[in-house]
Image 1 (spheres, rainbow, N blue to C red):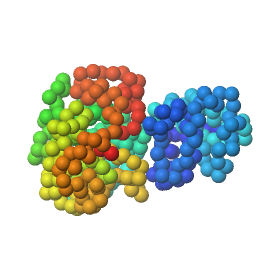
Image 2: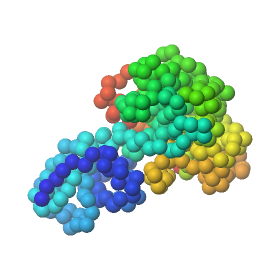
Image 3: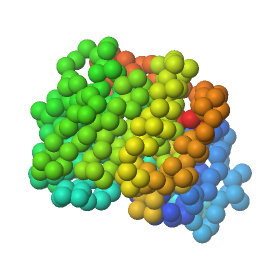
Image 4: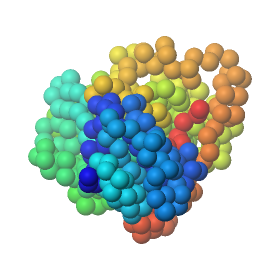
Length: 375
């Protein structure tokens, strides 16, 4: 039999289409437990590569005969060797091209829907990291929101659509991934917007994104209204796009709420978080479609692969929005925080422009799962 590469975009389609896949992950047990490729209909076997150096006989009876088998490791090398050994035993197997590093960086652009007065909203789903970025398109112009450092996906997509990137915005100063906003703005000549309350220490020029600011994209009827919504960071800003979509950054997710502690100020910012979720957002239309900057679990994906839900539905179903007692809310938020994101202080420093790690270092800084939510 033979073994062949499976690319990240092929795995992504299996995730979105809820296909079956058997993953043999040959990384260390701790790495697998911390972070793996998630799929609703995926099955897993984790056996470290070093346990298989002398042969794969010990795992042959644990592998299925009726599903695609994908061998996964950190960078690709180990999975190629294991896949080759399995093929020599008569199995048809695949290995993940580029390993988990490649999976961490892959993004799937998906159309969310049309804007009321013309234009489209696109969501870029980073399945391996839980990051969500956006492109608003109207009348030949585009705005990109919460871009990742893989800037090529956005510039290429804009070129395919035949639109010019005019604005790049970040809902807040990110701490779990490196923003591509400044790089895209520099490459395209677009304006880079950042909430000034998050930008006190940045060392580059930016356009201040403040409450009530309107950023026009294409037709004048397509506006991005800035809504000051602190809690995850002191400057966190949500966007209402075309009176149809609410981009919540890391304040509100589909199945959870944002964490207020990434600057070490959980006790100070939990009140802001509650004010945003329980008062500012309550004044908005329940019909707005919430588009967050992250998702936590694969079950949050809709049938088409998007992560989106009406605000009214979240007020009814999201536990974090239904804690009437303020003391109970404060206790939930400050006592149910996951571990800090990997290298989050270095990521913040990078997004401030204070340090400029090389590309390989940036990849290493981002490795691992998304940890932006209260559990």
